[in-house]
Amino acid sequence: MIRSGKSSDPGESGSGWLKLPIETLVSWARLRDISFHDVEVKTTGPKGSAVFATKDIIDQDPEPLMTIPREMVLSLEGVYNFAKSDQHLQEVLGALGDYGRTSRGAILVFLLMQCTIACPDIEEKIGVSNGWSDYVKYIPLTPLPSEWTDEERLLLTGTSLEAATNAKVKSLSREFENLRSCTESIPWCKKCWWDAKTGLLSLDDWKQVDSMYRSRALQLPGTGDSMVPCLDMANHASGEETIAAYETDGDGNAVLLLRDGKHLRPGDEVNITYGDEKGACEMLFSYGFIEDTMKNARELFLQLDIPDDDPLKPAKQAVCKTPPGFRLFIREGKTKWESEFIWLVCVNEEDGLEFKVLQTNDGGRELQAFWKGSDLEDITSLKSLLEAEPLWDIFQLRALALLQDRVETQLRRLYETEDAIREARAQLPISSQAWNQATRLRDLEWELLSQAYREFEEEKTLLAGSPTVREFLGLDAGDKADDEDFS
Ligand SMILES: C[S@@+](CC[C@H](N)C(=O)[O-])C[C@H]1O[C@@H](n2cnc3c(N)ncnc32)[C@H](O)[C@@H]1O
Image 1 (cartoon, rainbow, N blue to C red):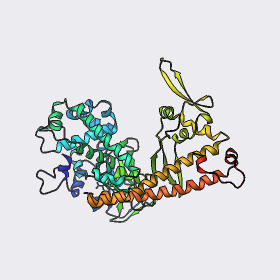
Image 2 (image 1 turned 120 degrees about the vertical axis):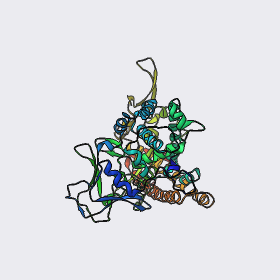
Image 3 (image 1 turned 30 degrees about the horizontal axis):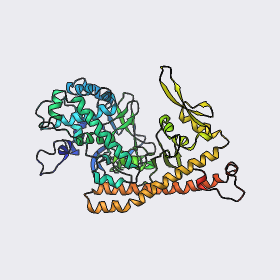
Image 4 (image 1 turned 90 degrees about the vertical axis):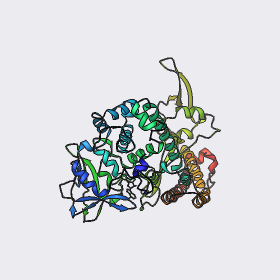
């Protein structure tokens, strides 16, 4: 449904009903009391639409660049306010139970309702038209990796986005099936959305509203996850390139403000940051692009398995509540990493880790971890306990060896899949957008992983010289510790 509404293919009859020219946005905004102060929205080319200055603007100017009344902000609360006067929206939200009370669930359903309202193939009068029913017509299709074809997703093999995208595709299907099973007993939903003959919804529609939400939602201070019309036309730039920021004013309106020390000339683009700390993987996942200025992937998350020969593997898996992996990132040019999980992988019975089955107050049984006899209620406290141990250097070495090994495996996967992705490019229908972004991600992750591999090697060499390690391994002065001893 949505794809045909956004299409302007002259050969496709009935297409283009979910599109309005961006030039008409200013009149739409005026009708909704949205004010633009010396800025305009225009279409730029590869980045889509963007906000531009129309005059000289300096940071002492007290007027916000844009003010969007709170009633137009689409948040969980905003959706429920719209639903007060829209019986059809209320029915769907009610049928979805807890999911309909999350920001994501409520906003996605609201967007789907606006597209349904606009659809000319639906003869019944569904929903109540509001400002957003036309605003969705200014939102372009944004092909995020979760909407790429199976062939295009092959290009992500060996990147940290591979697992994340596959998981997202599955969860979108689950959400869509949940929407179907919760709403197919509502007569108008059955007829307009699900009926084999008259129903118009497909999984692709759910993917489209998901990508509208993910690529445009922001954390509005005081409101939380929201979509803000017109403000969401601002593109992203990080660091010193970021010109403006969003805020909530004293009346709860969303405002776009020039940052301190910034100055705009007519024609300059007004951009905001979508998160300077976000890595290449997250940018591509949520926004469908990687900034040109990025020199390495900035950060990535790699999953880590507990080795099969670890006798405590099942018990460790049962008590572990933290993500099974580690986050690699660059700070001030150096590789850093973060993981609660890895410390559980690094230690075993002979070090002091133990598991017991305990009886709970309600008569149930529960597996409990212990470190040297003390209850390890919170697995995340394991690291601080290990830091206090005389063998802390040994535990660090084990962690580094595991990390380096996992980084090497990832590098090898990237390397070994290079030929296959080039062949895919030559033989399969792959869009240049998917190809350009995926190959850029591959290059940036390669950079980050190679740097991490080198720096882990240096850190291991340093630690191998520590007196604790030398004594533990029974090394004579001058001997070199071997990797295998640590893992
Ligand atoms: C919040 S919207 C910004 C407005 C959008 N350009 C439009 O036409 O509606 C976010 C989307 O804009 C595009 N975008 C934003 N900043 C970009 C950048 N620096 N480079 C390339 N595309 C960008 C991406 O498609 C992203 O998903």
